[in-house]
Length: 104
Image (tube, rainbow, N blue to C red; front, side, top):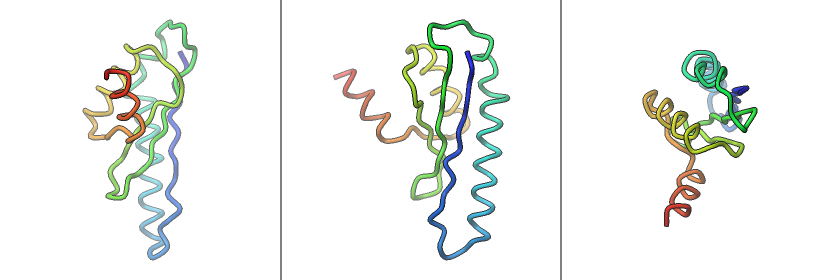
């Protein structure tokens, strides 16, 4: 399985460009670490799904949030959720809504 983590860079830092540079470089570093270190075990895994794409961005309080962008088996989604929660990342609100509608 090919794992790709994409950082969605914040462009709404109108007051402080230096802050934008720091926050965006942090998000790029975190995306690379998630892909190359924390989810490296998924890369050798055989699955019906050949690729996993995860989007990282900030919420309004500058917490890192994640979202799985393509359909993956529940076991892969759980592994991603566990890895991201250990790192302190929060799921994107739309992901939480999708999961609760599937359960209810």
